[in-house]
Image 1 (cartoon, helix red, strand yellow):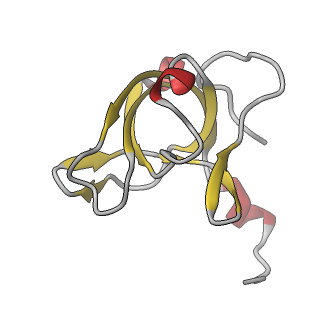
Image 2 (cartoon, one colour):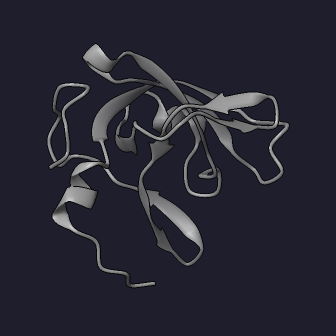
Image 3 (cartoon, helix red, strand yellow):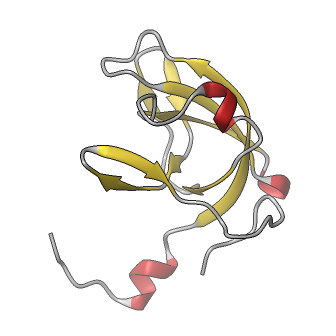
Length: 111
């Protein structure tokens, strides 16, 4: 899929840095997933469901900085409300999380 968008379209996507502060198995998800609680600094705490169980152990995710889209409407997945979308690159059908090269403040905007 390669559809051109304007720069104004891109500016509407709010991608922020957050730190994962809690990770739980998401037993009611159709596909294996974790429930993540993410600290976005001044934006507050948000939850997300992430299908990243193949490449990441819960212990590896705790305190890890990630990138997430924070301005999607909440989405119900089974009995869980996902409030943001963690960003990753897909390789061999698995999601590889994107993160800042250096530690930055939670809530920092990706431009």
